[in-house]
Length: 316
Ligand SMILES: *[C@@H]1O[C@H](CO)[C@@H](O)[C@H](O)[C@H]1NC(C)=O
Ligand SMILES: *[C@@H]1O[C@H](CO)[C@@H](O)[C@H](O)[C@H]1NC(C)=O
Image (cartoon, rainbow, N blue to C red; front, top):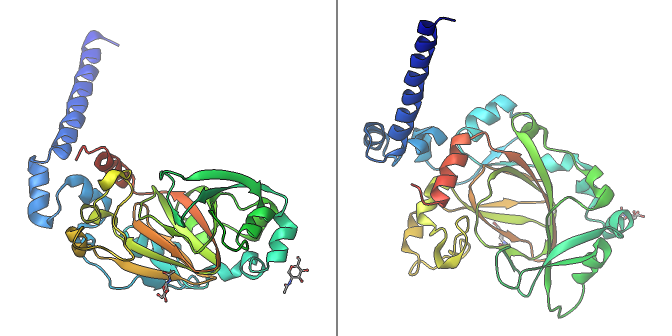
């Protein structure tokens, strides 16, 4: 290669390099031409928000979460109508196809299959589960002991089996929801068993399909781009938590929360909820025992990952 040719490539490299750096700065600076134009035309604040979803859809809300028929919704429809538009959807009866639906309401079965498995459960004085709170502790016990904890009258502690694989061979009673597998990259399956738990409102960085097999769960949800109304990170909570009680909001204390589009989805046994990544959710479970399985997937919204990271770090 002659020296001229090397220079030529070097020049190309410089052009590309500065084009990339330049566009990056253009996109990141709030007062840049592109961001001003986006504010002007779409009413969004920032280019990165635009890349997350179709801006015309970001500001339209359904009163109720849509219902999906798993026998009708193809992966393509699912992607176009829900995933890419950041719309949650309740898949009625989706979980009924798996053995867990019939078997897991039978406690003798649970004990017979997995009673000896060592698990760890979150242990707290109240039933308000959140992992950063003071007094949150992990307790190691067998799954059989865990099941018996619910029966102690006047129990001093509450337990929530969460974030972990289903115990032992109970794993074989479920499968990954095929519609999720067809679109996303699988990350983790998590088992949630408790007794009348109520979580703190928070977001997760994963696309989620939550199937309930015993009891029920109520998800009170707010879309990710309404982060500005949920007082994220206030009162010392982590940035992906909100101090507002979605289930019973104190509007005097948190007036902006009135602007949020709060919706509640009831997940009955055998139903599964698709909840897009970064949705705010507070989860209340039925007064008795409830068992749910959340299958988590990596989000396809890479821009969303990026934006959420930036917001949490207060870059934007
Ligand atoms: C519950 O599970 C036990 C143990 O596997 C089994 O013997 C029993 O028949 C089951 N009961 C019902 C109602 O399915
Ligand atoms: C869940 O929602 C249902 C109906 O939407 C309601 O009747 C029930 O009281 C709620 N339960 C909890 C624990 O939030």
